[in-house]
Amino acid sequence: MFNLDWEVKNLSFKVDIKATIIATLVLVLSAAIINFVPLLAILIIPFITMPGTILWYRSKPSFFVTVVITLCATVLFNHVFLLTAMTLVIFMSVFIGQLLIEHASKERMLYLVTTFMSILTIGSVLILQITGNLPLTSKFFSQYHDVLLSYFQMGGNITTEIEESLKVSLEILQASIPGYIVLWVFLLVLVNLVVTFPILRKFKVATPVFRPLFMWQINRSVAFVFVITVLVSLFVTQDNVVAYGIVTNLQFVLEWVIFIQALSLFHLFVKVKKLPIIVGVIIFVMAFIFKPFAYLFGLMDIWFNLKQRIKK
Image (cartoon, rainbow, N blue to C red; front, side):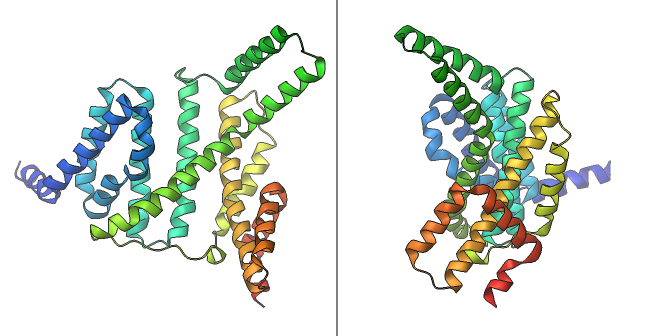
């Protein structure tokens, strides 16, 4: 009994009561605002990770207490999407806080947090679809296709070519959804790091600064995982919905990370060769247009360190 009492007292000593109360109020209030005025989420989301990040950096017991209270309060809103969003926010706070503790560079934080959050976000979408809280993408686009088809039929100008073109366009859009999710997560993480880090410094949280893009270097393990994922995707069919979704979406995430490495390589090439700005812009635009070639350059840089050869 003495040991139990001592542990409880020791835990309460470690918990920063004031910081816990403030962080909890901020998170619960943010959840309430998002629930009742969803449009304000655009202003709140870039800052919402700050309370969790600060607590994880300074006092993990305080963080856990805040998380429990916040999630319990969020459950009271009876909104599964809000609960999912707040859970993702908590995970993002942990990732950022832990990388700050490890003194990771800002660009490493950017692609690591983007990778983990993309996987969690896409995984959350899959879980919501499996549980019936979110319609399947194929079903949604099928209904959308029927609506558009009915609209054209009412106009009396529907042809086989138009119908086939519409079907192909929707299939391309459907296949691009994971890519759009990754892009959205990347932009969200980028804005979050740029906006919150100056504020975190005022709370005596040591934060790094962005190094130039040409100095970014992704770990070789990313390329290894990507190759394994591509090989696995060759043996997974669409009939196995869960496995196919996981493998396909993981491939999208890793492709985006490798694409960033390719941009880093191109940036170094432009800098070393002292090419005009307009040439650099053209190279970057071409990289976005011909992404498969950019992926190839990104993989080659990760495996063979092409940057060292460019410098020579």
